[in-house]
Image 1 (cartoon, rainbow, N blue to C red):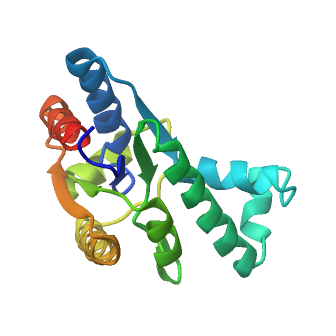
Image 2: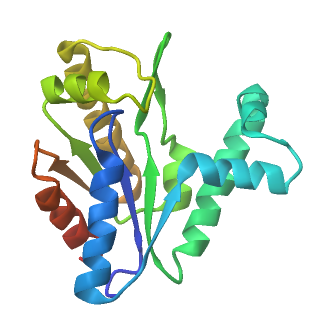
Length: 196
């Protein structure tokens, strides 16, 4: 591996097809390069970090932790991910921003992005109208309804947050379009980013 930083953060708003793109890319890397890619969900890493330290017993308790503790757990989870990336190529599956009733919550605050030190931050995007349709057609998930304009705003805000993360860490920022019926193409682009 020519790049000493082996972490690619992959983000995307709910309904964009991020998980499908990640799975497609991981399969391509295995098939074409015979390499494994470790996929880590940032929320799961946070829970693991907090439970190992006896701070929580279940995921529901995570939201009830003091803000200072949450920030510390975020930082420690980021450091844990960086440690795992010393021996493997890693994708961190997370959200750049979380849409809340009180605005957008930063999913990758400074103390997290610095701890992870990614080589690339990838935004998986799709046409806002297609995302709205995917959300409404997905019976397996209970997603908040948003108009296409709000989805477009959310994606634009995610771009700004990703660029801020790149500024702090020197990571490149890449947008991969997950066009309807073209997940293979999006997966290939992500696989190329992982192997770069």
